[in-house]
Length: 253
Image (cartoon, rainbow, N blue to C red; front, side, top):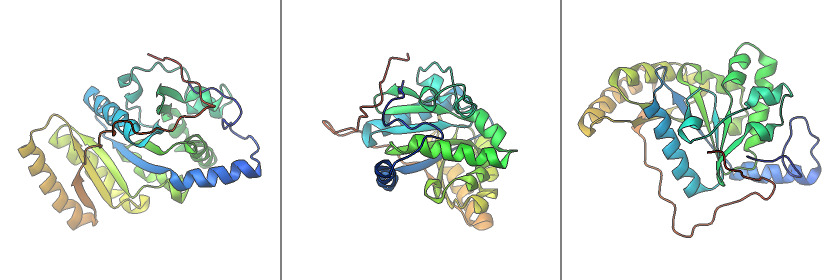
């Protein structure tokens, strides 16, 4: 797992001018994504997210999954978790101990308990958002997984952390309808205008019919765009990945 040492960010640690400039540069390169987890979670959802995360990390380099929806993606990646973001915010562990490595270019930060508390505590919401931003500062991609019903929470995030698109994994028509409608009802407040559906175990014809019907409803009633999720490109042979000397990756399988 990432090891706290020189260069690893700790909550509340002072930042000198050079590290501040590095953070600004890194944020310019960092790309944020959002996954909205339907109310009805399943192993298929977790496996699909884990598979996409592996491909994304292989293609884009250092990738962080912030699981604030209890999606079980860490289990699907074969990880054993001891700490989470709430432990770090409470001072029970270092933030690096809560961020678990699945590979040299993929990390998972469990954050569901932190989000639960942030929902009723505005001050804590600011701390949670700041911690997420700090952990992601060294990454190339950061993916925030939120419950679909709580998409409006991203208003607490700094503007550079707010994606305009969201991915929704769906396995059944009823599941898709409930999740999508719940999400897009709150989309105006969250400033999300495009939703991509990741169809799981659904035939192409059925997925096409569902997408067509939902897209018409989304556009007519909410002014939102609904599209099918695009596949993550395969990593090019010999492509260079970014590694962090201050992060020691141990086996967590």
